Length: 361
Image (cartoon, rainbow, N blue to C red; front, side):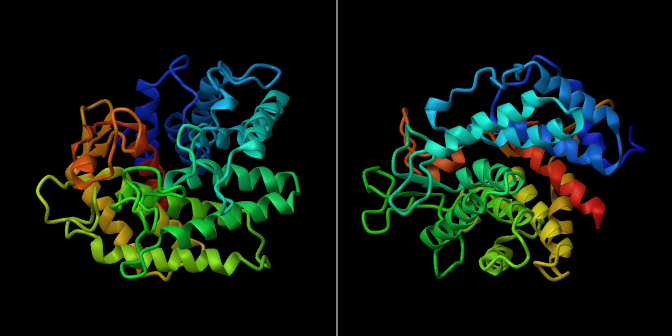
């Protein structure tokens, strides 16, 4: 196994632990399978596709019904697992995968929106934009639009990315706050700006990956393409001063000296992936490869281990959100107290994606 590229080693480690019947229709399950599929495709390893197919096979009925998926929740997190459906449709020729895509798109057609036109994150979080949500729906929505030749839908995806950037951006640091409450009704929202009080590294990572992945589907002559590329440049540049000497980024990126803050794997993987891919595609200059290399080296040194049979990845924030019950107030104390996990798909998926991009360099 150790003779394989590291991305495939990680994917095969996940495969050993994650077998047919264990998949839930959830963004993190879709994320790790999407990433593993990228590794398998890069090295023409058909076994990875067969495994991914077997995971989805049990969830997708012939009429496109998706087990455990509920459209009426209007939960953007439920869309991300749909990204794999495109390759499953293309390679298997089975219509059920297209019908499942249609069901996800139907949710987006009626997804509630803020007055500024950006989707609510979930129906249970009304009038709220979370950076996470742009990744959860954006790349799927953009690919669906291009495959359907739906220019209006693609323009809508792009506009939501642009509006979110302007709403969330701190003009001083260039970083993006985690969330925005248009109603100003949440205790975590600033009465003047509607923004949550802190930056959260993984949420910034979700957004940056969303912009870069959506760009895959934006025509070169699209009038807003350059605006998305500028976001990639500006946000990437804003992140560099917060990279630790270890190569990693902290859970709360601008509070590195505060007690309890820690170097976090999922966000660092997302930034590495973004820097590698954006450099490969010409959005960033080649200097960003060194920052990405440093990031992956830091993860490998601090959090990647082997038991002799499988690789394991630690240092992953298990979850973070806002509001709800019990109430999550978006404070520094909140972000650092959430559980730190090993082998959580929210970290393993981006790590595999970053490895794939590093191996393409």
